[in-house]
Amino acid sequence: MELIELDSAFSSVAENNLKNLMLALNLGRGAKPKGYIVEDIWQELARAKYLLWEQESSKRSWELQSLKEACEAALEEKHVLDISIKEGFLDEASSTHLKQMEALRQVFRKAAEDDTPAEVPDYLCCKITLDIFQDPVITPSGVTYERAVILDHLDKVGKFDPITREPLRESQLVPNLAIKEAVRAYMDKHGWAYKAS
Image (cartoon, rainbow, N blue to C red):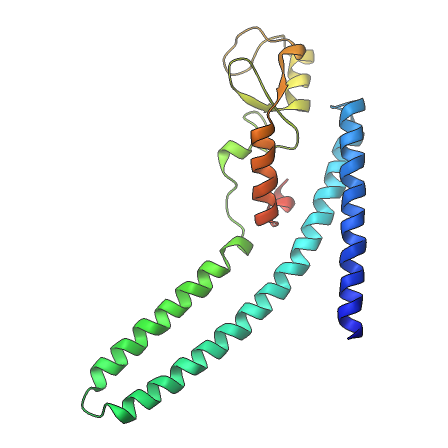
């Protein structure tokens, strides 16, 4: 009982810390969107979310492995029983058993997919840095960039869209809320991606 209470207390503290980091990040973006403090807060937030995912992933992995082993043992028992009942149909029982074991492995492979690192989809990444979006903005031409990166481009390179080459001013940048929500949903489902950001 004490371990469950300790795990619950840890989760509560971790969630509170994550909320505070998100608040700090949003306040920092409002004050100075391309400031170094915003990047530092994002890195700390990503690290915290990755560590939380890693802990939860390990727990899920252990539970899945235990369940898989129990299911395989049950299928083995069923196979032994089938062989003793269907004396003349040994090939059919063995074939059925192999198909069931493969289906079971596929189910558990699918269940572990979200916790398996893969490549982040391109539409969730900035066209310039190829990093996962943190604060995406969209230009009038429809291209989405990371806010700090496009602001840096406008300051240092010129007042034009780096892909379309059309004239572009900072005031024309609009938050891309759809992509921001897509990134959040993807990261919530694939916590390993926080390590890549």
